Amino acid sequence: MCGIIGYIGNKNSIPTLIKGLERLEYRGYDSAGICTIQNQRLKNLKVKGRISGLKKNLEFKNLEGNIGIAQTRWATHGAPSKINAHPHLDCKGEIAIVHNGIIENYQALKDILEKEGHKIVSATDSEIIAHLIEKFYQGDLERAVMRALKLLEGAFGLAIIHAKEPKIVVVRKGSPLIIGKGSNEMFVASDAAALLDQTRKVVYLQDNELATVTANSFSVKNLDGKEIEKEIEEIKWTAGQIEKKGYKHFMLKEIFEQPQALENTLRGRIKEKKIKLSLNLDPNSIKRIVLIACGTSWHACLVGKYIIEKLTKIPVEVDYASEFRYRNPLVASQDLLITISQSGETADTLGALKEAELKRAKTLGIVNVVGSTVSREVDSGIFLHAGPEIGVASTKAFTCQLTALTLLALYFQQEKGISPDKEILEELKNISKKIQLILKEADKIKAVAEGFTENKNFLYLGRGINFPVALEGALKLKEISYIHAEGYPAAEMKHGPIALIDKDMPVVFVATRDQTYNKILSNIEEVKARKGRIITVISKEDSKIEELSDFIIKIPETNELLSPILNVVPLQLLAYYIADLKNIDPDRPRNLAKSVTVE
Ligand code: M6R
Image 1 (cartoon, rainbow, N blue to C red):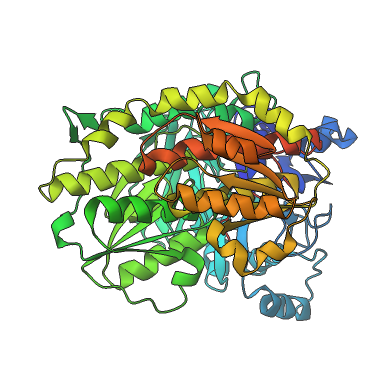
Image 2 (spheres, protein in one colour):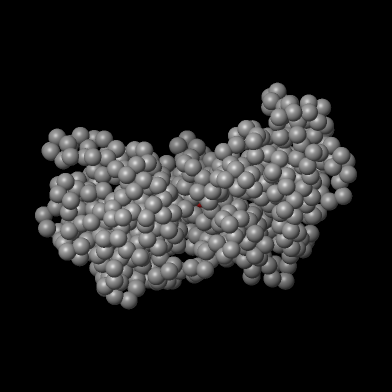
């Protein structure tokens, strides 16, 4: 969602704030703003649109100050506009806040504040925070914030400054916040990516913690004012990892990083045909597994169900995190709840995790971002080590999630006294090289994309373990190219979607050789008979499907349980090239943000 950054130190804050905002832009990009303290007065500059617009603004030249806060916004309440952009100020223009999250009771608070004479100018839920702090301010910012917090309901990461106080107060409740420690300077941010150019030393705030940060120190308290000791931790990612490195977009870079990312997920986890995972749980005590996530990570869950059930015979259910959390789910202490999340900060996923914890289920997280909330909350976890994923459309995280799920299933086999599946163990050694072979065909996939930039609809069909790949292919296309696309189990086509098929409907089949091969072949015939345009992802040497197809993308042979890892790659590229040919920036698709930290 929104990205926030703050600086306090002996330098001009502007370059650091701008760099930080640029690093955070993937979290939201509809408006941006900066507020600094200059000679005990606030200087606030906001623009509609991207950070590049903020930098071009003429007033920007006069902005300086060695304390400042800034935000890049993804609108929740109030349209993207200059007035709704953050930072928001109180009536006197002495208090400035930046906010990531949602204030659920803002309307009630707004009514009270307006009755008391506060003039609220924006349509956001956030502005009332500045006014509420103003209401309680009596010369001590931290104390005023503490009092305001007692009235705020919802989720927030906040950074607050007062023109007369050389400090930044930050609060975390439901939205991530970290403090970065430099030498004679400190930083605050919603995401480690914002700090990578400045420091590696960070402190992760937990929910219901407030910190007061000065140029040389920080103190953390709970919301009752009790001091809390915090550990300084080290970020392992480097600034170089979050550069485009010659690629036109982060998404393309991340697609091409998949061979290396998968190697990193596997590294050190298979030794002498044994799976090495240090998990705090006994698979023999697990009666049922529930996999929960959102978006692409939910598609990984669907693939995970096939892999885990096939290899371990433990029953697996899959649920959307947002549905699971509100339906009083039946989970108990013999259930294992596995949450999958690239960011580890998705609000719905965190909500579902809390629900499972309340019901005493064991929990395990498959997460990319080290230090993220999911990774801290779960009983055990597997980090993907995929490196930072900046493109809003998830790519390498997905294939690494599938790899981690495979490792987990093999680990469960082993801990249940069965030798981990030898063929899969062997094939995992080759999987990165096979992705590389697919990536070498990128130009051919681009040539396919050229024929589909004008289409308004797409169907993606797959069966069995490749049905979720069809869903993922459709999601990739719709989120970055704005073409309506639906994923379906291929056999379901004749129960409805077949009515849509005519010469203008492209149908992408994920049809590599597996146990349902003959069935999907019939489904392709059905589309052919109705003159649909057929794009197929097929195994090498498949002349039968080749003959039926208008376009083919060939995939190296692999074990069926690993086939989604390969089959999704051409679909990622197809979506990328269609978006790029339509001149859409796939790293910043409209209305989307990388990490959805609101419900
Ligand atoms: O960080 P998470 O894996 O929890 O994110 C879940 C979804 O928000 C995410 O996968 C989203 O669907 C992506 N835009 C997909 O490309």
